[in-house]
Length: 422
Image (cartoon, rainbow, N blue to C red; front, side, top):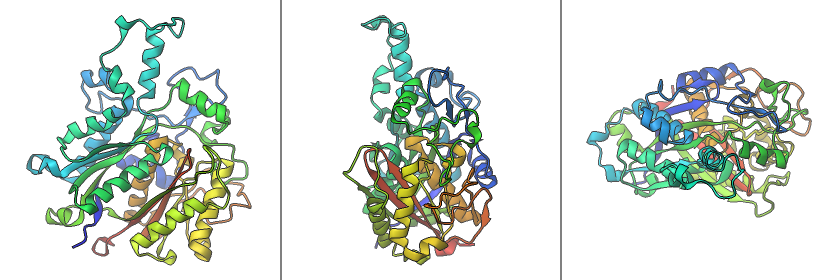
């Protein structure tokens, strides 16, 4: 008997939203949450805007010890994880821990803490050798990004497979794809999965400045990310986290769980072309979409919504527009498309999971969130990008895609189960 992977719990920390309820309200209303950076003095940098999470760790239930020792990305994962676990209704005291695993996505790990500790122990870089008497005991955890997955495993006592997936900006979708594969092959019955990222530090900002990948629309941060708009000039960095409970279908049904949807198909490809460059035809993303469709046994006409990567860079928007046309043919022109980064920015390894969570809510609510800030459509991006206002629609299956530096291209099909369709 084949095994199916379904989603039974959601937890979210996003710019402009703490928790799933606020997150859906933000997306469905088309509100933007990008602003001038407040975490540090960004005045020396080309791009001085970001999507920041208004996160109070103590108010969110973390202890003073956790706040003082854990990187912000780990704090995000624990708090969003707690929301997802509560939403799932799972009782881990009655669950075999060897059948529970973790697959967590993150692109830049504990970069913020590493930079902070270097600045502190080197007197802001003045000292050639750092003062070892000042080194915190947690420095190894900061250098080793798998510590993030370990924290999530400790949260539930998971003794099954535990993995940190780091494939750049596709980490958040790849982690859930990997979790679904472990469920389907029988290696686990429950996977705590998703992506977390807290990259807003000077070193990250300057990296994107050097690439000229980020928007420098510093005088209008709320409208800076403009996917598919003729005036777009780059992405807006962000932080955030989404944790999902991925569960084997019959296991979920046996306990009467609410099922948001099924991970019906997933695939990833690489373009072996350029570290940051993309070819406009979107061939590799198209191949990932084709494989995901075959796995899901869905024809292009069965897709009711596309959640775009929609980073707001010139080449990405052309690339995925080409991929959608290549894979979906003429039907691509009939499918509503939208991009959440226009509202919450690009949280690197977390964004794919935030987008999957949003897609599952769209399936459940029958509402397609809009692409914000789309006022002057690029004539080369000629699909239906749902500009500025949400749209009611019955969606049985959604396609979500991710594109990352290094040439990573991922696609996932999310589908409502027949007995879950309202």
